[in-house]
Image (cartoon, rainbow, N blue to C red):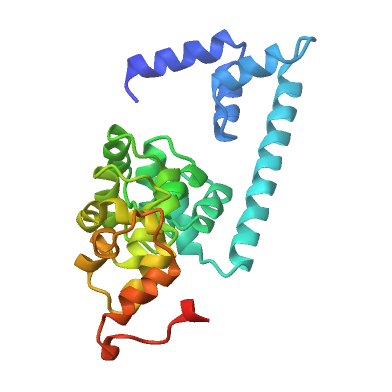
Length: 255
């Protein structure tokens, strides 16, 4: 600390009414001049130094007691001293470290990028459980107007993040994507289905399981001479009957 800095520091302590020796005690206890100013403002009566020192020591003792309790609990939960030091050195309180670890951030290196962007552990987890690993990705997704909730509506059904983003970029609604993905369709194939999409996922799944070619499904209306709204389960069975038996399994629609 240079002379000018020391002088400015001494002036700050003097403004809150402490002598150099008193200021040194306050500093050793971990307080700053601003803390003394707030203490004086919060008390209607004028405080002398003995009372200020008593309150500072009581506060410091309470903080140490809470910290000791948290540290004891930290070790009791099976964590290590080295892990505690790593979190503390990174600027986290142990209570906050617990929260980050519980949300899937095992080390301060995992949590720090998110905290630096202003995220809480809960807010960060909303993104990471979709597969997003870094807040830089979030900025890009938000620029594309893709929210964490929209992604979670897709990825929680087992759709990989990159696949989900591809579907979203092609204009598909989040609620529709898991069903098409589970059927094994690509976005291009869903587009090609055209009005055949009106058959619904269950009927499409049934036809695919019976070996009905994709091109046949797309042209069912033409092949049957019926509108898409008129096609019923019996018509689907008739189409399946045109497929060689070796390509068919049991027919639940017949039951």
